Length: 291
Ligand code: A3P
Image 1 (cartoon, rainbow, N blue to C red):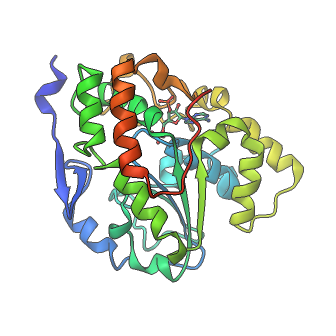
Image 2 (cartoon, rainbow, N blue to C red):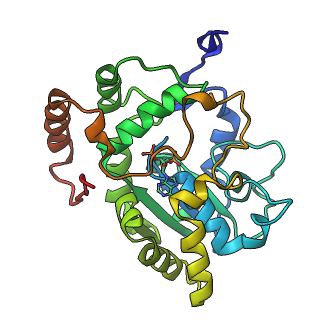
């Protein structure tokens, strides 16, 4: 069976690369005026697979809807915290009870306008060398993205934004330079990876959620890489297998900082650094690159 026969793929919507068979234009059109509520929470990440969208979906589910992601009829976290840009037949986001939690890969210019007046935004970033590596593996694991043979070729596409999600650099720069327009928290994958407890406290403080010690312990314990990987509710393994080739990977792949060192050659690294410093020279952001 050749998975590549039914590959789609990328289509451009207002300058942003989407996956054609997952995103529909009418739904995307409706988002600009999507009505935001005071209690809405949007977690924004560059797609995929980058900053632990999966991680945040689970952490927020635990923070707000613990009972729905536990037990026998536990819902998938993607139902509890869906992607706003993906239209799900079963769900009408306008009718979803508050507080509504969403993840989104949308760039700044496509996000619902109302989010500037109400609601909260958490932007999760990760060092882009690890993003590129995670993304590369994700292409081979998912059936809806083109297989990538050579990492070097993929790296070029990534640097120039010829991938789902367009340019990592534009995504973070646009969001970060407009952060004052939102009730906004910036957090990195690396800090969550280093100290999940402090990160959970930071997130819950931003969300005005007062948690007792026991709840914090529970979230930190369940949100660990190991426990999520073994938990079918959290690891997205129940997502339709027609979209993913389980023999080739998983959503929770390694969960490490600095895995890029296993794939980057010296030449890749030089090419990357040169590109990075040019693109990011005016951006006051620092990343942790090493384990
Ligand atoms: P790796 O491919 O480097 O392992 P997304 O959900 O946005 O697709 O991001 C996926 C990345 O987040 C994967 O990175 C995955 O392992 C990591 N991740 C998800 N949950 C995690 C957790 N609990 N701890 C550490 N990393 C996690």
